[in-house]
Image 1 (cartoon, rainbow, N blue to C red):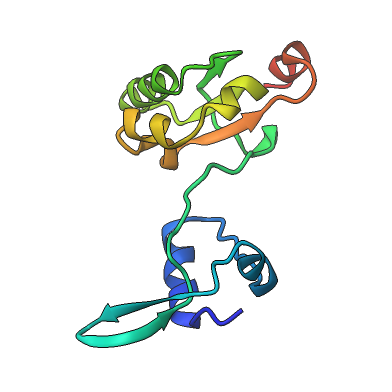
Image 2 (image 1 turned 90 degrees about the vertical axis):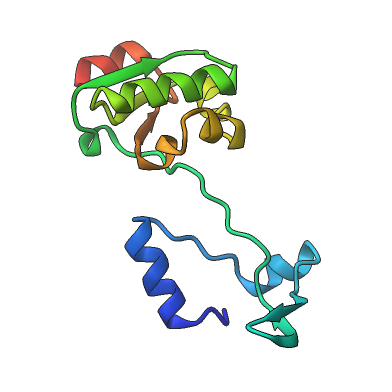
Length: 135
């Protein structure tokens, strides 16, 4: 609500999935805007303070081989290093457990040198055996 159309178009050019928080959610968390100095004009109300980048789980059908399987890794730094190394080897698809998924945070993004945002992830909720059989 209230986001300029050109800003939404730009965001969708950069990432495939753009999620917007509706105004009531912003209000609930006290994020109803703040004053700023933009382009030399003081006290302009800015409707958003930050942008959060996070991976979106993909279906198995959307994944492209080869794959890296990460099960129960909890160190965000180690996960980030693995993602960076795999990406530099041309691997962009990761199959991850819930524990590893929970480690895909800012620390992992830094350790991956940002490559985390260019990767596809499939979150395994049930059985790794069944998921790997489908792949």
